[in-house]
Image 1 (cartoon, rainbow, N blue to C red):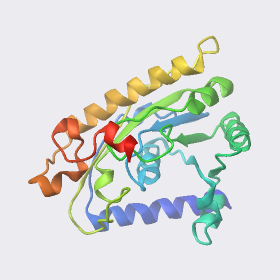
Image 2 (image 1 turned 90 degrees about the vertical axis):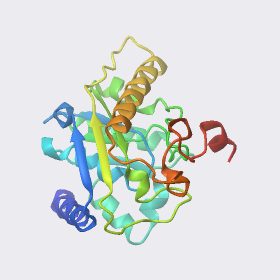
Image 3 (image 1 turned 90 degrees about the horizontal axis):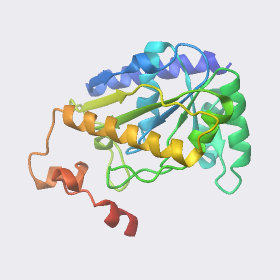
Image 4 (image 1 turned 180 degrees about the horizontal axis):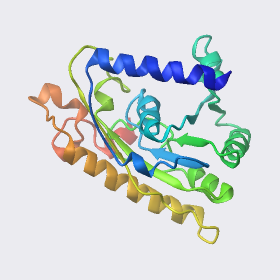
Length: 239
């Protein structure tokens, strides 16, 4: 039943993209393996990032199973959908069950989607990464596939109203070459290398992004270090 539901959900999302007239710039999707397990790792700047992360796996005809907070699975509408599409609930007080679930899925050849920052970054810069993605890849002996999203925060993010108008917003997606997770390297070391690679991809996505804020009122989605009015990482942490 799960994969009978997932493709129509993807089709509905793509129809919605067209309705919003989003302008996509997607590169590097060849790095998503066509078969076998993999951990797809992305930055997190929007409530909709799981949709765009999954989009990066479509050229490889892969369905991504996301690890998401368990409250989403308790919702009367999203819960049945999330379970039917085989996404993985994460109880942050008891993470062992979610880890075991994800590990089984990777060993069965699934692609697991992970946001190692755990929550949306209000500064739109990378927060520290948790080591779970590295540990999963290491134990399942599958690659880590890094990627970065940019522009998704303009649609819907923490502390700002949704913008689902037909505004022709650009969305930039960059997928990088797999990061190895060898058995002899520590998970923190792998995580550091992974974060560095995602950071490089994020900078590449930002450089390629065709839009710049027209005035200070429009600059909320641009990071402080790029001249925008988003809070700095230190300010975001204080908030």
